[in-house]
Length: 264
Image (tube, rainbow, N blue to C red; front, top):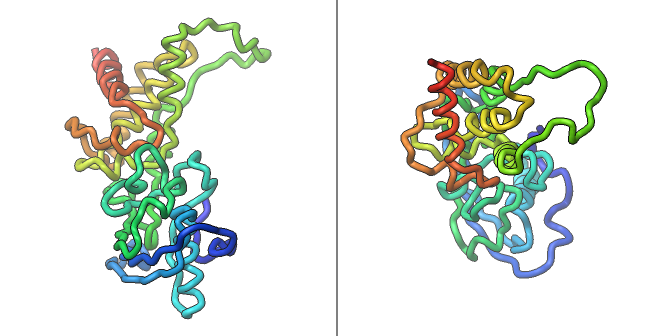
C-alpha cells in the first residue's frame, strides 16, 4: 500500500484532449483523534483524459506550490487490481461509474465547473488515519479468522489431479475476484462486511481443497465480523451495486446456508 502526500510523477503533463475546471470539496483530517472537516479547492486545466488519482496528484502539486499540506490518499497499482484507491466520490463508492475502482474513474465522467465531494470510507470498522486514508486492518483480521486450508505437504500435485466441476470452479473464480477494497462496507447503510466475507467463504466452500475447515471457517468469520464492528446485512443491495468486481449477493445467501449447517 502506498499513501500519497504529494506528487510522485508530473501527472499534469502528457495528457491531451479537453480541459475543464473543477471545484473540489475534500475531507481533511489530521489524524484519527482530531475532528475532520471539508476544505474547498479550485482546480483548472484538468484534462478529461486524466484518471481521478491523476487529478488528485495535480491538486497536491498545486497545494505543494502554495506551501500547503497535500491531501493524503491511498493508492498502489492504479490498474483496478489492488483496491486500495478507496474513496467516496459524490456519495458513491469509487465514483459514479459502474464496476470501476477510483483509479479507473476518469475526469471525462465529470462536467466543466462541477463540484466533486471527496470523502474517505465511513465505517466504524474502518477508522480514519489521515485525510482520505482509513485503516482496513479489519479485513486482514477477518481473512485471518478463516482464510486457510489444510493441504498435503508432499510433492506438488498436477494441476488437474483434483477434479472440480465446471459450475463450481466458475462460481469459485467469480467469488475469488474480490479485491477487498471495502466499497461494499462503505456503501452499506449498516457498514456490513457480508459481501466481502461471503466471497471469501464461497471461494473455498465451492472447492474440494476448502472442505476440511469448511464449518469452522464460516463460524469463525461470522464471529470475527461481529467482534470487528461490522454491521448486519438487511438486503439493501448497495454492496453489489458498487462492487468493482461485480461480486453477487448470491454469495451472501450461500454464506448464510453454510453458517446454518455449521451451527447444527
